[in-house]
Length: 328
Ligand SMILES: C[S@@+](CC[C@H](N)C(=O)[O-])C[C@H]1O[C@@H](n2cnc3c(N)ncnc32)[C@H](O)[C@@H]1O
Image 1 (cartoon, rainbow, N blue to C red):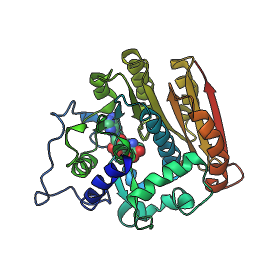
Image 2 (cartoon, rainbow, N blue to C red):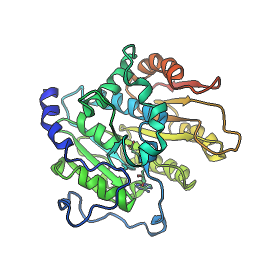
Image 3 (cartoon, rainbow, N blue to C red):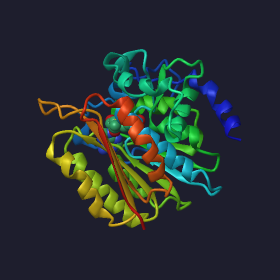
Image 4 (cartoon, rainbow, N blue to C red):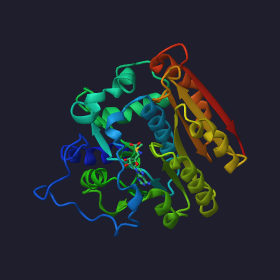
């Protein structure tokens, strides 16, 4: 059943417009379908957004985030009942690793590339790398899926996907990439923190929400906390996955404890530090995921995967992991 769905989607890959730092799709390109209703919000003050995820595609933080997302979606897919996947900060959907921004920074070389040819992967990482392999069927690592494409591959007929993206170029690329997806995937140009309110609870009362801002704007920390707090009121049984960076700024250091306070039980926190804090105070030295209402299998899967990640992605003697969870 799974294989048949993949086979159907594969040809569409050739038509993907990857986010390689190309200019906006022009009028000569296939018209983008208006898969989404009118923009939910136009957020004027954020019009100067500069973050482009392509610079970081496939890096150590993506490995942690996307391997967790794969586990969360696999778990949701175990029951026949449908679910919704909601991505408040979607990015472009798919990235080229051989041209454009990602090739320039080559961050994937210290991320996914270090797992790509390994044959001894713990099962959680094997599941994740299988998804990346499916996007690179000739065996050469050329493309990297963002969270929307990863989720799209895992969705079943009965499941739905809702994506938010605010960046004017990213949204065009995202729409183009999902132009054949039909109404199972709705794309909203607008602010994901606010837009999600209208979607909760999702009709099947099952779902995963990924909250994945770049945190370049330090207001993202407070907005994420507020978004989770409000979302839990609307949809208390949903699974929420929040990505956060390990950087030297104070907001980042106190963030996990602030997240814990939002829900005293039923959460999991995982962090992967890959190097010592940069001396100049800038730069990402690791990342974490905070999961509200995680599946009971996640902690065990991470226990196997994390020492392996420290060994393969660690850049110096400060590489380490943290895993903490509180049950029901
Ligand atoms: C870290 S990237 C997302 C990566 C993606 N979730 C993935 O894993 O492939 C963050 C994205 O959020 C977008 N963004 C920033 N602020 C936003 C907001 N308030 N609402 C929706 N999207 C936003 C940025 O343009 C950027 O593309």
